[in-house]
Length: 422
Ligand code: PMP
Image (cartoon, rainbow, N blue to C red; front, side):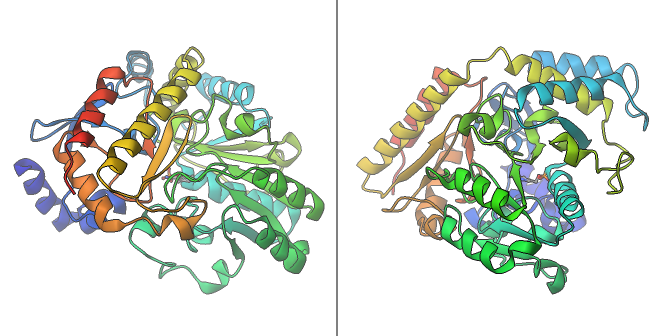
């Protein structure tokens, strides 16, 4: 950790907290971050020459692992032609076509540069289209750091216990209505009270930012019905779940037809990309087709587009069912090992994402996720990392598996877990 420590000390002098995104600072797990030198397949290597099995995968994008040969080659070949044009290029059309072909509800899509931009722009579009102001979001869901979503958010906001954030005007978040995840009654109550001014319900169809929390049977269907009934839009934030829960995202997995979808992470293959898309009638309200403004100097960037195209093209050939089976095996075996050590463990898993919660009771929303024992998690995290297993440094994040991981990595992970002491 010597070089990492030196770099972190240097970083803290020039970057707030030494990091460019808060959870990376490892504050809640009471340790310092590892500085990464390189990644390859399922592994990352630190500047201190330590090798780790990576279950963070850049927080989800790298479902093919680090530096997948096809992705590397695509970016290298795009690079030969220039890094940015600020004008249309063929790669943008190709990636848009791949997305539309994959996601049942998406008829048109606009590229942006991050998940935050995707959700922020989708909400603006929903507001402009419906001519309403309010949005329902779920406690513990994270939709990036745009003002409207920083009310009881998940991810770093949950990790650092920040209820809201200074700098967001109260009249902005006054338009953000909150409900507990998986609680349709609360959503219905909000609709009864504010129905004619609710532009949209925004939801992670599988929550990934309070740890992994699955939608209970009927929850997503209920949101679809209520939004239809009250003339609001249903927005799926598939920044994590898109091309992860299945190639067609959570909407295909659960067979729900949202009006708008936000994407990010996997569609950029590890480069900075986001996108929002949906029904043509709604998307055509975006400028220059329609009056709702949204733009970006680097949007549709050729390097990012080429990484996205290569990733999706490769994913079409991958066996999602087998990755799901192996992830379930890994998650259940981890649970078994930790339970044998006398720990209370809940595991929530779907496709290649899961979270272990150190609590007796099922985790179905943020309230129950918060019951996860932090002290146990910190010890678990620190010991796993010392054993060469790189997990998200927060109890409220998702563990990501990839097509690059093999039986060898999963078995090694279980072996490290066997040796933990509590
Ligand atoms: N939505 C979801 C569901 C996310 O998980 C994230 C990021 N973790 C975002 C939006 C924001 O994406 P970005 O960090 O690329 O701005």
